[in-house]
Image (cartoon, rainbow, N blue to C red; front, side):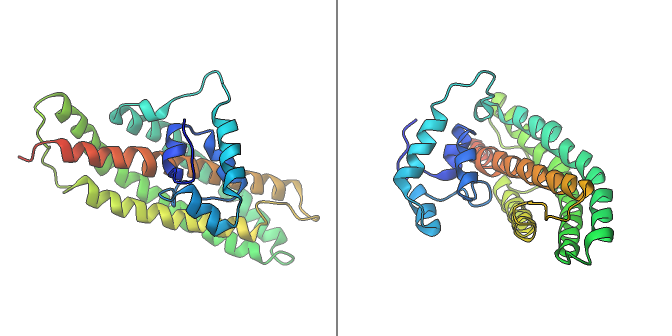
Length: 242
């Protein structure tokens, strides 16, 4: 893979997800703000772009058994993968994290008042993510599957109440950005999920769970923003209007 300072961050991660580890190391957002060049990101973060490109090349060229090339999935398979992997993860983890976080806030918020904001941010995210995923599962993803069927049959754009994929996707991307900002704030408030000296085991587990949740959210948003959504728009544009 040819990498230079004009390479688009989101496209690099779409082609090889191992690039994400390098961007995470330098705190470069590859999911919600993936439509930037390496040069732009390095300028903003004051990072040596040659060093970053070197690290990206090294990581991407590593051979790893069992890597899944999600970028090659048909769009209907990718929607299934996102639902069964990432939507189910969110649905499982929200009720798991909630009581831990409530307990930590109850016990430690006097010494760590920032935990109250962390709790509210997580609860807001949980509510909005749940609603967001339902909109995808009930409206956007079924429409994308119809686009795939149309491509394989008559080549005519399906008629639904959704309107265009592009318009609906814009709304989904805006909601992704809001979730990204929430978890950036949670990371900031917790010192990148670093337990304080007086943290009990529950406190440490809670921070670990929140960090894992954010990492899954980044991959989840990346798969949609950088792969599923642009390919769906391209497919819709190719189909004949009825």
